[in-house]
Length: 254
Image (tube, rainbow, N blue to C red; front, top):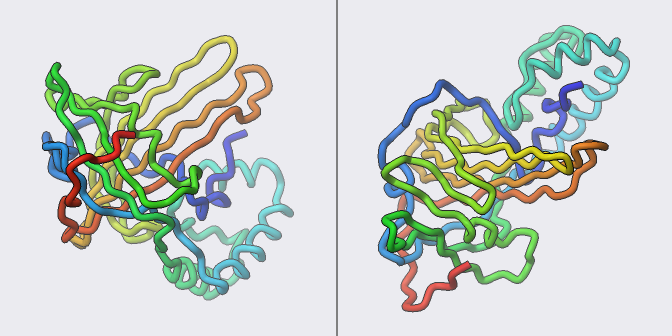
């Protein structure tokens, strides 16, 4: 059965959300968001915190969901999109006014900073760019060091990791997404063998309100036999539109 994405929408490390058709939102999207001369742009690892009101209403919805037949649960789950407000379903909200209150509470979620981060790109001898980053925190759960193994090929518009090549497609959300309306690109790969199934994603978007850009990274791996998780690491970095390159002569290469 498909994961009940509707009920996993407030995780700090979100999974895939609404993606559109294959294409390029901008030929230089990545290099327009990140400096490419070895300097660093200041930003922050962020996470979404729901309002207390929403947490209470979500509990009620979960209870109603649990009482539905399995096939109805599946149908609702199939329509769900990670990190996006659920569509109205009479079985979950018998009174439309209750759904309106739920939607209003959803939009009261707060974006908070988990850690300061500085990130940029440096050109390799082969013409690709590798990620460099620095951070002032010590919590390894939120340090974006995992992106340090990645390179970006601006000619082919693909990300390269130790696991292979991540190919891209357009990505777009509206104001019902927890991070707001965005447009950009999402790159991903899936690597499967007899032991495990590994998925890796990079997403680069710009907020349509002009406030800044988001960089999302996630790597997850599950057992091919038991489907139990082996690894799951992800974060969202927000780069304010006004952020300037950090003044550092020896950026920490992660």
